[in-house]
Every structure is written in structure tokens, then in C-alpha cells.
Amino acid sequence: MSSFQEALNSGKFVVTAEVGPPKGTGIKTMLHDIELLKGKVDALNVTDNQSAVMRICSLAVCKIVLEHGAEPILQMTCRDRNRIGLQSDLLGASVLGINNVLCMTGDHVLAGDHKGAKPVYDVESVQLLKIVDGLNNGRDMSGNELKGSTGFFQGAVVTPEANPLEPQMGKFAKKVAAGARFFQTQAIYDVDKFREFMAEARKYPVKVLAGFVILKSAGMANFLNNNVPGIRVPQELIDEMKAAGKEKALETGMDIAARHIRRLKEEKICDGVHIMAIGMEDKVPIIMEKAGLL
Amino acid sequence: MIITKKKDRKQLLENVKGYKNFFLLGCSECATLCGTGGQEQLEELKQLLEAEGKAVTGAFVAKTGCQVLGTKVELKQFKEALAKTDCIIVMSCGAGTQSAVELFDDKAVYPSNDSMFLGNMTRLQMFDERCSLCGQCILDKTGGICPVTACPKGILNGPCGGTKDGHCEVSPDIPCAWVRIYDRMKKLNKVEEFKATTLDAKDWSASIKPRKLVAREEKK
Ligand code: SF4
Ligand code: SF4
Image 1 (cartoon, protein in one colour):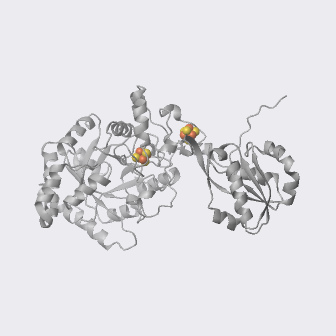
Image 2 (spheres, rainbow over the protein chains, first blue to last red):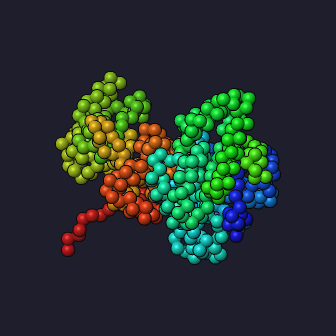
Image 3 (cartoon, chains in turn orange, yellow):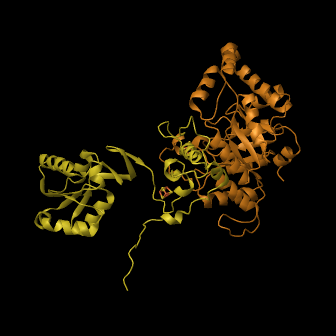
């Protein structure tokens, strides 16, 4: 069993963070981040050509994470590989000792830096979850028997602030049925609203980690509201960021995150949090400390 | 119908600059509706070529350019004009162009249009792509709206996280296919069906190219 799965099963409030592989072979900063976060968080997601921007592959970086003594979660999108490539990489991940996989459809190539690329999407997130379930049970997608099966702890993503929410929740149910055992959510900024989402999610036998993206400024909050699907920063938080002024903005953003995390934990709203620091990995331990998790 | 758009005329003239005598072949079906291969466009191109000092030996709008035999029969009346031509410009889709290639194996054949997609005409000369000819229709399971085509990711089981106020992450001009499908299924009381069915990945072997179909029944 993966140590991440064990942590979730133990009932402890779990924390995951993220490693963004760089574009190029210069991995010093990334290694520094891994060293900084290991032992503090329960697992590290490794993003898969995030935002369709070409970088080092998630699989290779997961292996590096393992070698540095941390627990990786392999993010896998369906944008760049067909069913043969996906399954083959999953088998590869398994023999390298990578035991957690997060199945996603993936941002469209138009979001990235190779806009002329052919988007694959041979399968999508729900079908990829089914594939993982099959591999775990000794069968490939075509039903062929495997010589040795995988033992993945597989998860998926969900957007609690999706607008409209109903079809998103329908898909959530399909992901559970397809084998998802944990969920990491898109960033949330409204704990009350998230609690409503969790009331629905709790009907399913899955673990849920609430997503966090640290606010750096009121401007960033407005940007998220206007440009990023599925993220909604409530006005009172924007006001709080504004009131803090430029100097204290980041500090305030971290305080907000810590305050929300503390509440999620104390009120047992969900099973943990997923902190997407996006270049500010050094802030993750600070937030955890502020939230009383370190 | 097959949606076509005119190639840039400068580019077209550059493509055919080595030829002198032209025959223009349009199509009365899709290309006429698209305004790329009807009588008017043939006349337009004729004038353009003549202004460049070229000769146009004949011009004809075929009934259905992709119908090879029918087009062959129709073109019989232009035997002379065709004999004098060294280049046929086909003003329909890529299929029509290749009918001409098949019929005139010793003549240069050039397309005047870019062929784009199978589309529905929503208003005069406005076209939407609604079917990708995947070879295995699933409209029966998706409320009659095709996610293979209407969703840029071809997702078969509900919206991705990119839906923003009902629009697609790829462009605010695209309504999210899965929000549309869900709304329609809801209207038809099929939400439970949506939730309960997980569609398997498509069998793309149904659309391996080139495809061929023999629909006629052999007489014994
Ligand atoms: S599923 Fe879509 S692409 Fe396939 S045949 Fe039906 S409408 Fe066309
Ligand atoms: S937003 Fe909707 S239409 Fe666009 S890629 Fe996602 S599911 Fe498909």
C-alpha cells in the first residue's frame, strides 16, 4: 500500500503539495523544493506538462522524488498519449515504485506553448480511471492478461466551484464508479460553500483533499475570478487582501490559507489539503505551521 | 454538407502560374451554398485569370462534384474545351477535386478551395461543425449532441474542470458541450441515465483512413 494511502486511511489530516518539473534539464531548484518539502507533506504531486506547457515528464520526476525519499503522486493527463502510451507509462511507473496516480483529462494544447500540437484525448479522465482499475486487476484495456498487475492508489480531480455544478457532480459520481479513491480539488476560497460540496461528496466512499492556491495580491484574486474556470474568490477575501496593502499582501494570503486549512481540519470538513504553491514552494511549510500542522 | 472556403487568390494564382489554358469546374451542392464553387465564383475566377493573361477554355458547375460517374457524363459536352486546357481548377471540396483527378489522369488539377469540415448551415453562409464522422455514432447516448465534435477534448462522460459559466476553457465563443448535453438530458428527464452510464473510449478503428463502403446489394 502506498504511504500516501496509509496516511489517508489512518485518519490523519493529510497534506500534499506540488512539484512542477522545469522546462529544461536544470533541476537544481526543483531538487531543492523536494528536499524542503519531504518529511513535511504526505505526498508530492508531480504535474504533467501543466497548462500544456512542455516540460520534463512527470514519470521521470516522480522517480527523482522517490529517490529523494518522498512519496510521489503521478499526475497523468490524456492530452499527449493514446491508450497504448498511457498504459505503458503506467506499467513503467509501477515497476519504478510509483504507487499513486492522479487521472485527469488535461488542459487543451491551446492553453500551452505548442499550440499547433495534435491533441490526443484518445481516452479521458473517467476512462483512464477505468484503465488503472483494470491494470490493478491484472488486465489491460483490451482485456489482455498482464504478467504482473499494478497496485496503484488512484485519484482524480473535481471542481467544487464549477459553474454549473450539477454536471460536474454527475461526473464526480462517474469518477468514483470508475475507481477513483481520492480526489484533489481545484482551489477553494469559500469554506462554507466547500462544506456544502463536501456534504454531497461524503456520500461516496472517497477521500477528499481541498485544493489551495496562495493569494499574492488583490489583483491576483481578481485575475483568478475573471480568468480561471472553477475558481471563485469571495469579495470579502479580496477586500482583506486590499486592506493588507502591497507590503503585507503575501503574508495575508498565507494567513487566509492557514486560517481555512485550520478550519477544514478542526471541523473535520475533509480529509486533507493539497497546496499548489506554483513557484512558492518555500511558503508551504510556513502555511502548514501557521495552520498548526507542523 | 462539406464546408469549404476560398484559398487566398494570390496563392492560387501562384500555384497555377505555370499553366495557360484553364477549365473551371464548380459544384451545385455544398460549394455553391458555401459561396466557393457556384456560377458566380466561377465567373469571378475566370475574370481574375483573364486579367492575368490566361485563357479560360470553359467553365461548368457540376451537379454533384463528388459523384464521379455523374460528373464524367456531364463533362462530355465540354470535350473540346477540355482538350484545349492544360489545367483544371476545381472549385468544390477535396473530394470534388479528386473526382477530376480520377477523370483526367493526364491533366493538372488544382483546388481553389480549402475543405474544412462537415457542417450544418445555421444561417446564410454561416456553418457549424456538429459531426466528425467518427464511424460509430453515440448521439443516442448523449442527448443528441455530439461531444466528439462539440467538445474540443472529445470528452465522453461529462464536463472537464474548464467549464466557465457554461463556456469552454478553449474559447468563450464555444458553449461547453457537456453543459449543453446535460441541460438537454435534464429537459428530457434523462439525468439519471447520464449519471448511470459511463461511455467507454471510442473504437477508433471505425475511422481508420481511407474508409470505403459498398452499400449496394449484389444482384444474384
Ligand atoms: S458520434 Fe458524433 S462524430 Fe460520431 S457519427 Fe455521431 S455525430 Fe458524428
Ligand atoms: S469546457 Fe466543456 S466543451 Fe470545453 S473541453 Fe471542457 S468539457 Fe469540453
